[in-house]
Length: 569
Image (cartoon, rainbow, N blue to C red; front, side):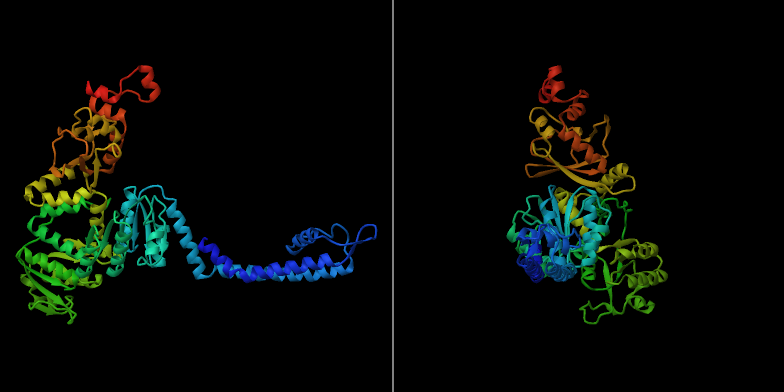
């Protein structure tokens, strides 16, 4: 039985019993009290007539005395029945209104409505656990790329934000604890259209519970979790979690790459960015003495990354309980004397990495006054601080939120992208700069989208049929369906074939069944490609230049050969 209906019946049991008893007593009295018919003969009302009279009288409709005028005894009983049934109705309605305001009932009602909306989903979707800054950014990025999501968060205010967000999809959202397996099942864990689950709460143990539940109940599901604890990360890995994202460790590695090979750092940032972000300018972090303010989990990872590239790191930390290196200074870093002790005059770089945005802004301003040539990295913890962080003029802004979003998009929307970036990480910086120039040439000032196409009957039916009979070059996927002479705003980054990865393939490379091709470019190019690989007539036009109307009737009237035969000629 539906839980909301069960709760209504249980809470309304007493009022319903009072209503039933009051009507039964009133009806019994009307049946037992004798009346008089039109000819003056004694007459008794039937149960049907009694119920009829009470129905229009007790509900204040009013219809008169039927079928005959009442005697005084009947009228006296009707007066008592009216007050009895009206009081019963008032009691029942009051209880119903009280039930509607009950938090438990409202939660059960919302949960039931949420489960129904999830069951009705007919397009693939991801479950996002946690709708804080990271979760909302990720849901917005998915929505921008046409991907449905389902949201769970323990905070009712955050759940309410999903209704106010400017999204194309109606996102089902539930206020619940993600650590409960029943909650994940209600969110669509067993739904055939569920593609994966992303745990982004600020509680590592809650994220671990999500990973364990998902992998134990549905092993084939892709699971991505945010985790800042190495111990819990190992636990997640033991359950088979597909991707564990530690934003601090990830950025520490990226910063080390930026110091060593800025071109590769920028390439990673561009390809894994969320939609509509601006292209980041090239960075050239210096090598030498760095001042690190804040030695929590973020600071440790940053220090490790900087020291890997041969930098000397001096730590400024205010909390004496934190185990810091020997070369550390006690303080916030907002004081000029503390920064002087840390060696700010001869430093080449500064990391304002505390968990307080105001302190980070103050550290940056104080340090810049003491050393105007510093390369400054600032940590932005809250989205609302964006305007202030931009105004302070840091060289590099670290948003743990966006680091996680980028990692999730790369892992889920373009799984080939992670392999591509790992493969090209050994290439020289000049190669990365050349690719960056090509991307900038088609993108203007916005970051590119990344997507992959698989040559298969399911994903690309027209292309799969053509590849099986003729040689189809990669260039066919880069032509505009409106004008084949015009290239699409897209670049083929790699082809995955038989386990091997071909980086930056030539346009004349012949596609084969089972190939997976990684692209980057504008969203318009991705949408145009879907038309090319799914429509035989569009593909014919791209390959041969023949723009012939399609359709079954036209083919029969013109006795035209099938697409594969025409291409084979």
